[in-house]
Length: 208
Image (cartoon, rainbow, N blue to C red; front, side, top):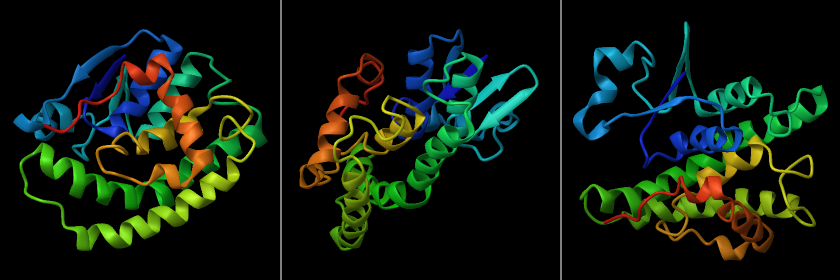
């Protein structure tokens, strides 16, 4: 089994964390996107979207971080991370989909403007673009913050793929100056994620 990643990608970080948690044997392949390896024929045969992460396991060619996380957890038999009971699985899925649809999109814009532009020498952030996305983030973060009141983890009373999917969205929270502390329950939950060894060994370097 081969997992194709780039270490600066929050999306690729998700299955990296799951791989660490499950200790499932697989080979990590770093795709050098700066050299255009993600657009070469060999990689496009695995993921025609030319994105990381991607996974190759025999005849299975899988992309999308959530699907890869589910596959790794299921293959490792980690029903604590990815439940098989229908209601529990649906609730984990709900938060994974909510992240993709509502929580991650505004964060991605702020990350690009405040972190990735600096990282790749693309100039100063456009704060006119950032401002409405911060407002969107505040609205979504308030939903998650309210949900986390009295809880250590997002669902099932334990760490699941929902936490990993949501948490990795905030990989660049400090670099992008996201106002995490405005949401104390969210901030405490993120602190618990940051304390996990699997989080720490997959953390990204700060922008140069």
